[in-house]
Length: 331
Ligand code: TYM
Image (tube, rainbow, N blue to C red):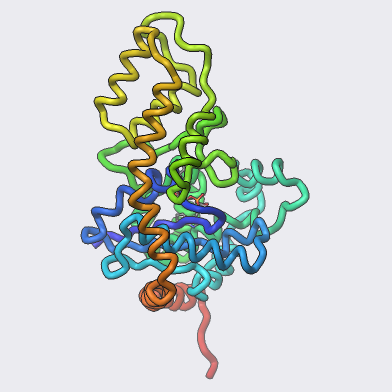
């Protein structure tokens, strides 16, 4: 059975980008793959959360994963910081990761530019920790959105480099997971700024209440409307359609597409429909999040079971890696 590893940083509530980029495809496939879903709480430390906030966010993301339909009996769902073998492998992998290649990654450059006062070493080596997360379970597939393409490429590089350096076949080269050769998913934000993201401040979250969702959608950036029949849509309008295509029925999308092509579209109507379709999609998930968040005993049980299963798999790999590198006990 092939292995899948999927991670989400604990820096905010799950949003539609996380769901459609990394979770959705796997909900019905938990029997077909050896799935690991985890909460990347070490990764969240690059932005220095307070202790209370860190703990609260991890709990929230755990509840949200479960509310989306991850089944802890079928899949391994765990918290990154429960697995000490991950930082151990991270340390070992850091020795074969080079400053130049780390400095060149787009996400590092972006973050350094946006927050010049916080260019910490964790940010620089972020892709190494992510590679450790992936290869520690010898993942074959990683379901990620387009935004993580470069980080995944680094993980592939580090896995191959280790194999080559020690002339072994330890790590499979992890592939991005897409269905039928489809492109990696990129869910847009509705503020005209590109992708939906936690740090972009433009996210529609699974936990948002209907009023907030309607407010966010109605504020979406649009233009003055089409002026020619069948004209190409500018990016901000395409974004509305892209979001609609994941939450609404094909008929609904077609309906607004036809109106656009005839220059008869009223963006207000389209936004109202989009907001309702998002609310219908997220409401049942939100109800489950609220229920699960109240059940500390259940969350504790899930985290413990996941930690045990993930540690077993991680410890095996780290033992193998240590032995390949040449660590031998003298006692
Ligand atoms: P994070 O927490 O930003 O996002 C989690 C997952 O959601 C996907 N995603 C999106 N997909 C499509 N459209 C969007 N707008 C969008 N926004 C987010 C991301 O691609 C990701 O799959 N570095 C990772 C967390 C991580 C990880 C890993 C992931 C750490 N270790 C190992 C996979 C494997 C991150 O910050 O994702």
